[in-house]
Length: 272
Image 1 (tube, rainbow, N blue to C red):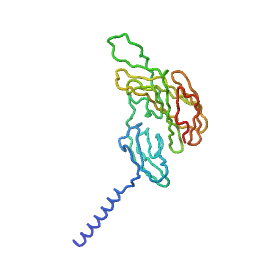
Image 2: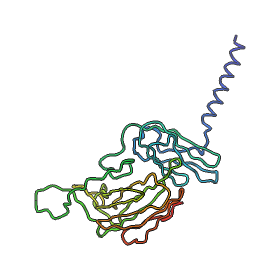
Image 3: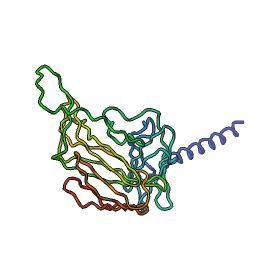
């Protein structure tokens, strides 16, 4: 009996060792994630891959519904709009690396992020507070909210292409040139689109009363998604003045025509 038991124990140990080695010999080029569990809806999650293939990584998410993905080479950021389990994949030629993540039913959006990317897919228009930047004659009044005009400011638009499956669109981040009080200021933004024409309106910078941090530049992010092939009118209104240009989408390439950069700058003008 002992002669039978010893070989059996040795065989079990060898199998266990081999299994352990296999478990810990994962491909060093696998997808890395900032977090894989406890992800909230609308929370930006960063992913990266160690790419030695010499080919650019093509990112995708399965299932692709209710997901917004932005990528830059071997790095990507994903926003999940619904709870559930997702597989984030990076394809490099014939090599596919992936990682599984879990999204909770909690929302990442809160009062301090109401103007951020977490508002997908429904773009809400912030309530414009009453302009209280005038001098207050009340000596005992507490701090109050203020809205600053953009009349003497310049808006810089940074454009990034997003791809989900065979559908693409644009993420447009606006940044003011001037700095405003409060780290949690809000660039009041309104996005609308009809018949292939897109309109962005920047109405001012809202600063909550009593906030003493800052000053910082004001930002907001809006998404055009999905975007169909063809030429689209693109208008930007800053403090009541409208500036008009256009962009053309051909496949996954976007080309902007923007002749007036006196108040609004778009970069890059061509996205391949």
